[in-house]
Image (cartoon, rainbow, N blue to C red; front, side, top):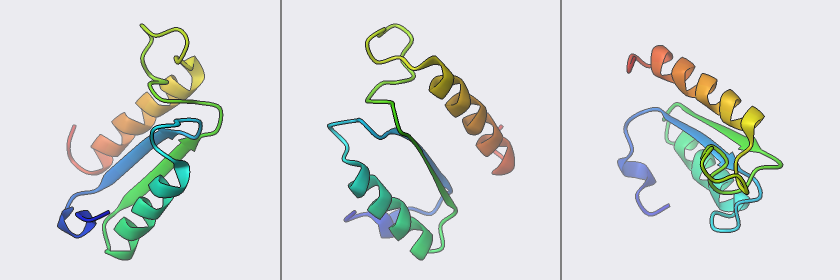
Length: 84
């Protein structure tokens, strides 16, 4: 939160709501601060996912549907903001 004002690029956040290391309430505050600062930001919180939900080599954490959705959103985000 201390450095939100330094961010100048669009931010896409793909988070697992069950990530014990990154509390959802803190993630939501961060994205609210980005938006308040005029930075394009989108937060997608996957309700049943934890940390590392995209890591298919970690079967305890991997969430196939969420990972596939996140991958598509990331590619669309890059296209929208000229990074792909």
